[in-house]
Every structure is written in C-alpha cells, then in structure tokens.
Amino acid sequence: RFVDQDKRIDVASHAGVHGYRFVGCSCSGRGQCDVERRCACLAPYTGERCERCVAGFALADDGACVPMPAGLACEDNACNGHGACSLPAFSKKIDCLCELGYQTSGEGPCAACAAGFSGYPQCRREQDWKFEAEEAPSCDLPTLPNTLDRAGLMSDDGTLQLQGTFFLNVEQTRHVIDFSVREESMVHIQTDLSRDKGNIGVAMGVMKWTAPVTAAAEEEEIGKGLGWNNWTAVDGRGSIKTIVRSSSPPYPHRHRIVLAFEFLNVQHWDNAACNGIALQISITPVRKFQRTIARANDLCSSPPPHPPLPQHVDVPPQGFSINGTFLADREEGRRRMVRG
Image (cartoon, rainbow, N blue to C red; front, side, top):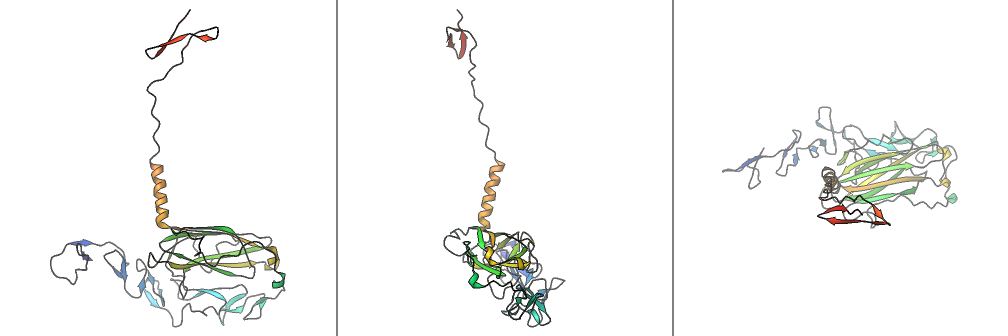
C-alpha cells in the first residue's frame, strides 16, 4: 500500500503528483497498515497483527474468525457463581476454574458439589474440618493486598517491588490483586507456599480488568504457559512472566492478578497453623528494562583500558653498607655505588 511521504495521507483517493514510500507491517492478510505502521483490522479481527478475534468470535482451524454459538460468553454468572470464567481465543467453549468443592456437571459449569462435598449451592466437605470463626488464630502475618495502586507500593515511574510472606486462609480458594500500568510493562510473579502436611496447588493468571474476563486479553506470555486449567506447580512453587500494556498510554489501564489455590489432603490443614504464602511481584516498564540491558551491554562491550606502563623504572641500587649507612649518590637518573 502507498502513502504520501510528505503529507502522510492515503493517496488512493487523491489526485496529483505525490511521493511514495512503502509502509511495512504484517496484518496477516486481515487488515491494512496505517501511516504509523499499525494494523487497521477488518471485522471481526483484532490484535497487533489481526491475529485474534473480537468478543463473540473464535478462531477456526484455518485461522478464520467464526461466530460463537449463541449465548456463549463469560457473563457474570457463567460459572454459576462458583468459579472463574475464561474464553480462550482458540476454543469454542468457555472454561471454568471451579472453586474448591465444586465441579462441572450436566447441570452446567461448577453447578454441582465435588466428591467429598455436599450441600449445593453451599458445598461443604463432608468431614467436619470447617474452621470456626471463634477459633481464629493469633497470626501476625499480613493479609494479601487487594490492589497495588497505593502510595508506597507503585513508584512514579511505574516500577513496583513487593515481597513478603502473607497469611493464607485455607477457606479462600481465589484471590484477586488489581494494578494499573501506564505503558508496556513486564510483570514477574513468584510464589512459594509454606506447608506442614499435605500439598497445595496454585494457578496464576494476569489479565485485563474488563468484563467479561477473557483469556484473549491483550497480553503476551513469555514464561511458562499457563491457563485456568493448568497449575503452575503441585507443591505450590511457581513463577510466571507476562507483558501487559495500556490501551491508551500514558493513561493508566487496570489489570488483575488472580491466584487460585487448591488444597490437597485438606484434612491436615487448619487456619490455626497460620499458614503463609511467600509472594514476590515485580512490575518494570519495558522501556526502563531495555535501558538497563543497553547499559549493561555497553559496559560488557567496552572493558576499561589497562593503565599505561611507566616510562621510567627506578632500580634499587646494589652495594655495601658501612656502619648501617648505605653509600650511594644519584647521577643522570641512575644510581652509582661509592665504594670505600
């Protein structure tokens, strides 16, 4: 496609003499490049390279966007109020990560009690392990934050470092932490769950703070692949790295971190043990990260020069000492021994 090099306008509908230049970008054959080398995607495609589908459509095997079946969307009650809903871009059905004690059945997603639980819609473990509020332990661990957009956490340049051990409630199966970025930023999350007996599984996800929540959010996973149905680690240790963006920089755009827990051998767990989760979250603008790497590369590619060799070496004199006194004098920059 051609654009006017001087006036930066599309010349397809303008007559006259123009200078032309090629604009290079790849829109996957589903859109056109504008003068800023961005794709103007044809409906119903979206994404930087028109590689995804808008809400209500899904990618077919041939890469085409096809309409989703009627009523298929991550609505507020898509998981019957007992799970987290996602709509993967390469799937033709919604996925629900059910809360502890719930499972998908013929009645619908997360619409029945899991094995060992009963009493839907308030599924409780059949064993009497339930922690009573009046038995609350005296635990001095802080609770998990609900937002990172607070003074003292997020710096003015968009950098954040949060590290600590937080109280883990065994009756809480999901926790959401909201945060905002003004520019393209890298998010790194690490977890380590302390435990006495049994195991804990943890799933982590980062997505845009929009409704409905979909897995086709504007994100790029560069670490371990993850999804609502893929635990990062059975023993509670996990790490992910994700790039998040602001849709209209420099204005902030909200995202959310979702931590979902699964307690195995729950009968060995109780809140009186003051269980904790070690959590580290770092957010760094990609621009700042690139500057740091560039400075490091400059230092590595230009080692400091060796100090210059001295032009004159004063060789200690050789001779005799008389009564503890060394007899020597200096003549024309060299030492001469005076013998007696």
